[in-house]
Length: 347
Ligand SMILES: [Zn+2]
Ligand SMILES: [Zn+2]
Image 1 (cartoon, helix red, strand yellow):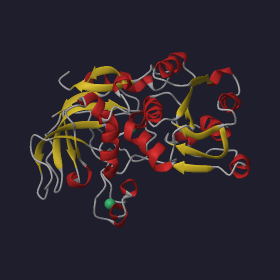
Image 2 (image 1 turned 45 degrees about the vertical axis):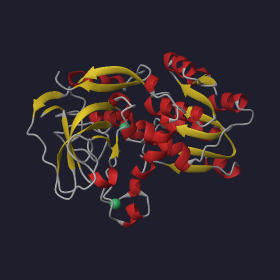
Image 3 (image 1 turned 120 degrees about the vertical axis):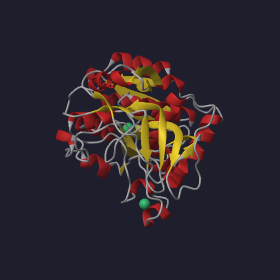
């Protein structure tokens, strides 16, 4: 198996040949068709994700074709094309039985706690409980984003904050998950304002249908959003895991607004000072969210298949395995708009 492996924090990834993975009991091995490069991979790369130890193959946003099945797998056979959520829940514990797979205590996380999909093959545990057939109409590079960013945004908006048509959504951070939220929210009939510090990303958001954009360098972001939305956003989505944007998200809400923390607070941002007086006086709700339970895939795929959302603008860069490290480094600075997906695993 060909893989891009991390041996030192912030170091280039080594292209290495490793033994092919064996399917675990209840699991499968996929030939990886596409793997997105996500901000969470950057946390892995910088050493700020406490779950990861070196050497390590990152990559958690992938789709692929089943090439081997382990004992006990009933729903999948060799040749099936599938989407995998980045959280592989066990399917058997009380949390899974209650439909709360994202909180499963026995979850396996390729790219974090297991070898990931910056490789031409990846082992996927608990296949029956997690995999979804990849519809022919969805290209692999778009389907990869259904492993993390699109599903995370969908669950944040519809499973957690219960965004309704006509409401205003403020998206803090116009990267992959932020743009996914923009596209999905527009499809749901909401109005969207996107906040970023990169002019190119704001223009990109506008070209994808954002009703308004706010340059966070230009002054009081929350005041600007309250003005644009005539009183504040109904829902704010924080996509960076950074204290300043989390404060901005809370301050941009109208009374009874809902804030969803999507970005992972890591490093210096694990603890934040937040305006709890605003939470109190505005009677706000704060939701944490992480991934999406696999049983919600049919609703999302139906939404996509019905033409409610076109995800194709999301992917702006198709790269080779050897290009993954450069893409990770882009998260250090003002990253270019859209997401990068590995589609060439031979180079
Ligand atoms: Zn991700
Ligand atoms: Zn479980």
